[in-house]
Structure formats: C-alpha cells, structure tokens
Image (cartoon, rainbow, N blue to C red):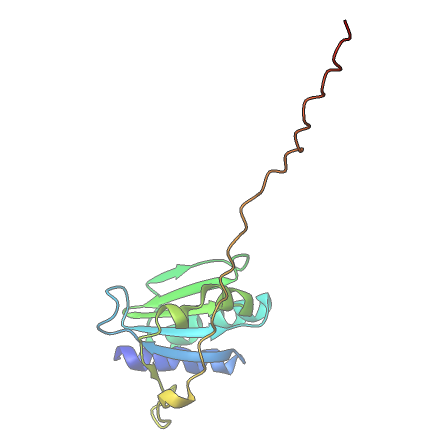
Length: 157
C-alpha cells in the first residue's frame, strides 16, 4: 500500500466518525520525519477516542497494518498515529488552533482526500490566521517622589 493511499484511508476512517477539518499535507521534500500529515479535528474527548479506535481497527482489519507508533493520551487532547511515512494527528479544536500545524508546515501542498476529488486550489485555501504580537510593557516601579529637604529656620542671634 502506497503512503498516499494510507493517508487517504486514515482520512476516510476519521470522516466515518464525523471528524472535522480533515486535511492531508504533502511533506515530501520538506520534512525528514514524515511524507504525509493527516490532520483531523475531534470535537470532544469521546470523539477523539472513537476516531483513534476507528483508524487503528480498520487499518489492522482491512490492510493488516497496525500503527508503528501511538503517542498521546486523551488528557493531552492530541493523539498521533504513525503508519510508515504517514503521521495522523487527531486534535481537539483548541489544540489544533494552538499548535497550528497547517501554519507551521505552510509550504506543504494540501492533497485531495479521495482519488476522485481534485486537490483544493491555492486561492480557495483558508487564509492563514495572523497572530497579533503584543509587546509587554516593562514593569515600571513607582517610587515615591522625593521630598525636598526641609529648610532649617535660621536661628536668630
């Protein structure tokens, strides 16, 4: 089974469990770690578990492929499954927004989820969120205004 077929199968299995915002990124030539990322959003911890279980079970049953690596737990809200050169990231919306993997790998082309569907054209790609960087103001230590020394009354002689 080719790596792209594995990525598309994992995306399909995640979709069967109603995962949202499913994307396949082509990292060939960009990353020594992986050739494809499958990014998936699970809206709750039970859905996170269901998506993970669906992918793992169906890859074993239908393709005789257990994941080579399973990482993450439900408390972390981010689970990673590795199938050869394919990394499947299952995240909650908060973690997906926080880690912004699409932005981190912004040079990676996005691929179609199925063979029949064309890849999304670049002009339809979701605009990247721009994070505002606010400079923290340096803490200013307030000091009490110094009082002028009291003038001593001139002593009369």
